[in-house]
Image (tube, rainbow, N blue to C red; front, side, top):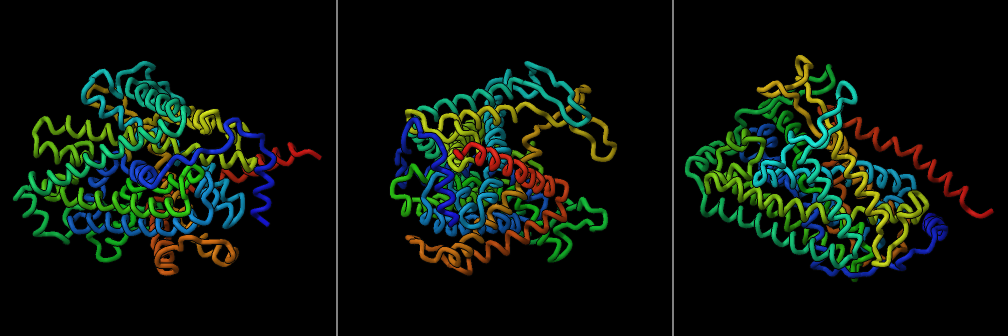
Length: 523
């Protein structure tokens, strides 16, 4: 009955200008989209914070192993849903079919509001930040429009760094409106380049830059936590813990550390959004999910081993601006290391932006086909791509680059200023991304639980691929991710509950769109 209702919603939409999607993505292209969407700048940065939380080389690697196990397990489970329902929209469709259109909409709403757009904004600014290594004019404090205070905590500005980020978003959005072939070409070229760059960093770290002092320091006390950051709860009645506080303390530290590593390994599900453009989707999407996540997780784990071969853990923990990759390259190549790493990260972030822009618009297209988003985003242009969905995504993403957080001292609550007395600012999307990690995990848990739901409610549907290790591996993911969610709810309350509120804010919006859809139907 639910499927029939969905088809009726789609039938109310106007015909698409470009007809049907073109199935132009083969297995290699799909795998490149999975890997390219995952590899951004996180792998070069987040290990610093993870190291501060867990305090030992062994547990640093454990955090990445846990992330890898969760990511690959989720990808193998999604493969069953992708093979069952190889349609544009991917995860939106799975949630809609497993539960109800409301749950699909809440995912699409959160994806548009911040998951996809906020990530694109963050990655575009990362590109601009590292381009600034070569052009001093591109700076977060080189103002075109100086910060304008909107309130005690927020401002809006346009720096040269922000402008470059917006130009990258505009450029890649326009490129992707010109058809799948051009977007696919950029994705394949840049994913290949950044995969080779990451592999080169690994090889150099393990075989060329290995440092006897780092090896001695890291592998002598491989499991013993040294200096660690305390983990404070936002709830006054919950005690502060740390990785040195026994098994429970380490469990909490590993769970909290997942925020960075899971975010760095996220976006692997984007290939499911483009299912309408994948050749032999029942075969190629599950395969690309397995191959892409397996490749990236292997590279991420090896990259952290390379860091430990080159840098003592305390150097990883306290790398300037958390740029662990840059610190490792500077040990091996001196001053040139920063420039080499900047080039690698620019390649990585450019390709990542392209993949996220390409894939995200397909979800809004699917929502519009169900009458739950702007009608224009449910049409394809003459190049057979959802151009208006791409444009709307690009406009909102560019707007997310502009707002700033007015940074305040956590003790005195006074504005933070630099040595010359200039007020310091953070990026709004960075705060929103902290909020939404909690929501992303909720949707992953719900989607994988959907494998169980659909096995029960839709046993007759053909399943060309069945989730590997079912029911044990999907159940492992659900339990492990739920534990992480509970820990984050207690120890990262300030950023967890707002993420949930962003999701829940979509409920009245859903009923508004539903009302408009019903009103537009002929009597």
